[in-house]
Amino acid sequence: MTDSRRIVEPAHHEFTANLNYTTHGLNPWFAADSVVKDHDGGTTIEAVDLPSLDETADVSIRYQDGNLLPPDGGETPAGTEIDMETVREYRIHVAVNDGYGGLKSVDYHIRPRWYKQEAEKSDGETITLQPGGLTSPQTDGISVKAAGSNVAFGKYDQLLREAADALGINSWYFGDGPFDVHETSNVQDAARYVRVHESVSGPIHARDGPLVGLAHVLENDRDGYRKLVQNDSDERDTQKPGFYHTTTLGPERVREVWPNHQLPVELKHYYKKDYYDRKDGLAHPKLEAAYQTSRTDETLRYDAETVRQIRRELDECVYAVLADAGLDLRAGGDTYVADEIFTADNDMTDAAIVSLDLSEIRHEQEAVVYKQLLKNGGMSPVEQEITEYLVTDGGEVSPKDVAEENDRNIDSVYRALKRMKGLVNHEYGGLTLESTYIAELVTDAIQQAEAAVSRATDATAHALEAADRGLDEKTSAFVAWAEAHDVNFTERDDGVSVRLGEIDPDVPGHGPRDTPRPSDACKAAQREVREILREGLELWTAMNRDEMTYRVGRWKARAKVPTERAALRSTDTDETETQHLSGRVWTALD
Image 1 (tube, rainbow, N blue to C red):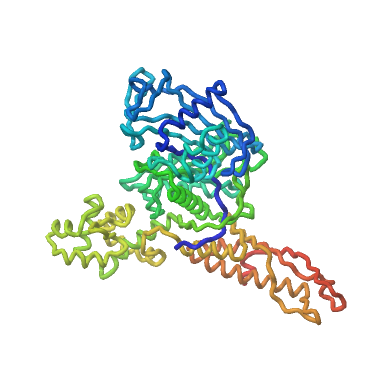
Image 2 (image 1 turned 180 degrees about the vertical axis):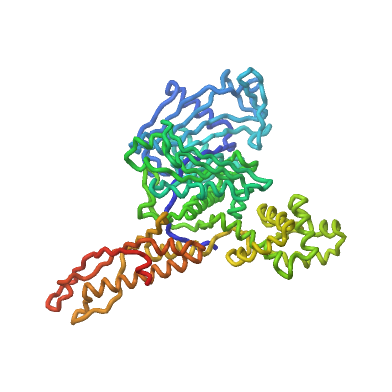
């Protein structure tokens, strides 16, 4: 079970879903047609109270011509009469009254659906649309494409019901509760983001940063999609480092770093096009994680469980990139900048924080391979046969295949597999190398065993012995330390910046009222800072981070201490004042 922690909360950005309905056949489409005709082509209802948004919004409806053809004989296979020569489509638009032109908005595109429906292409060719599980000879329905921005993912179907009700369309045409949609309803796009201050965002898009690292680590593997875009020129053809940088990973590549993730993602660091004219938060870049439906053949259903999965996986991608770039995961300092949607606030989350120390991934996998070579003088003949077979055969075979190929007893293969834990994955009767990078290492290692032994001495001393990239407990411990002590932490080129919250010095007082002297209280606060920083250093080095970077950093803190007047025995007051403390980390540690 993942521990909860209080860290910066990403904001919802774009979202697209196909919301399908069959319970009331084509009645929702007919109802939209009636409203549009009653209002001479469309209407807008202003300042509607929409509970799912907790805000007011303008709700409008209009029609558009499409390419759908009327059913033969004016009747669908399910028996619904359609007495019209042109099959119109309808759009319901919701735009929040936010003073910014409707940054929170959703467009609902309503289209009728019936079995063996025909459409006309731009060249005049008639095609028959596939039912896709939505319609049948007995069932008509509607498909609503919902495309919005800055609205919570799970609110789109409820918002449609509220908008329909405002327009005079029976809301129950669109379900009777949350996620009450047809099982074919699906998600096409989803994104979550944070806005990072431009002064600290450089490590995200740097050449040795996480976006580039994710695109290139394991770059010689045979399977999986990856794409890297690095554009540092804005619309004016002016150089702006990090203007538009993206890394796109297919599901296979994603699972090499996040083993429990299913979604292909695009990770993006980018500026608004007119950033140079902005004086507000929009002058700073976004870090965004977006679901990429084009990179998978799997269908992502629109239901409560899937929406939670989307949010969790996207947030974990954002947190991992931030952590790898050395940025504080807690808002409140100088790392994050609020905008009209992103509040730059902390919230409780159970999202995992996965380490993206990609050079360490390589070292870890190297350690597994080379330890296998080192133990007992090297790989046994059976172990070599297993690894060679996995490499040359594409990486997935069974123990029986290995035994038959090399004329071995099956028991000797199983005994060898027990010794190869961490190198070979043996589940459900199949064998695979733990990762594609390990496959490369095995190939090289078998060919150059003697050189590998020398190289392995250092590798095994500093790396873990597994390639699993699940929750990094040491990173989580560091985040928990920061949360417990109200620390805002930033890693910069010249060292770390540790901004402690308010220190409550634990110091005995003197005199009848037991009030400590101001100087004693300040010294006690500095001792408290020392203990906190020492604990942080221990956790920092446990993450295999550079100790000197931590030591040469600076720290700041506040301490409430009694005033000189309050410390006098002749006065009866508890007044305090805030002392601002700061210094070099290495000095405080000694």
